[in-house]
Length: 298
Figure 1 (cartoon, rainbow, N blue to C red):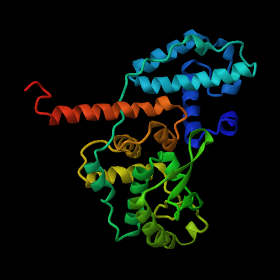
Figure 2: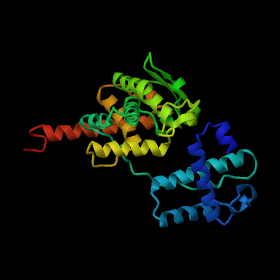
Figure 3: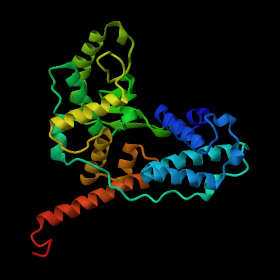
Figure 4: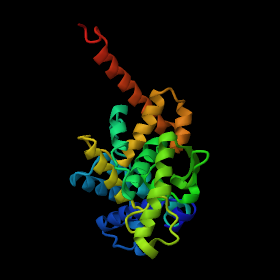
């Protein structure tokens, strides 16, 4: 875990997920709860395949299974490099084939009522409006938005400094709508949240605060998005990541360069960003079929 945190720059959420995945494997393989005390020489590719078969019987998705296998690959790769095991048993195990899933995004006429749903006559409403505008306006990940500090915002230039996956830093712009919402929250909403919290919030540097004057957490942000999706009568699953997908999709639909979108999203590989080109192509096809009088052979 120290290696992942210090040398790979893994986030606390990644470390927690990684640790739980490894613990589950050790228990499944009968190796106990402590990786340091386990006899890893007993683990071969058959052990791992039995574990994957168990996950399939439990009904876990291919995506989740692939994530758990990825944790094992990283773990045994590390052990092999350090000489703790002779060979990496995961090299003989194929990853589950993933069905191509297009990102879930919102149309523009659905985004507007969502981001404008929070009431701006209360501190929490000002916060929620700024939060939704920033998620959609900058495409931030959930972990990135909850970790924002006041010093990460350049309100004059309309820029936000983000520490993304792998500890990679990037600078992302936010538009006028997000700038207005942030200004209103920081000037009128955030001070009142701190005041209501009393001394509990003293010295807190987080941009987004909860009712106790402390940093707003991941669950809090997810709840806020769901709450206002219902208020906007979006009868579908809407998450913070939906707004990130929407940000990227709308940029490409508006003619943005794929490389620019990759940089804004903080993707290490262009292939990760290319999935949004499939979204825009599917969107164009659907628009054509619905709008052209002879698209369906009529």
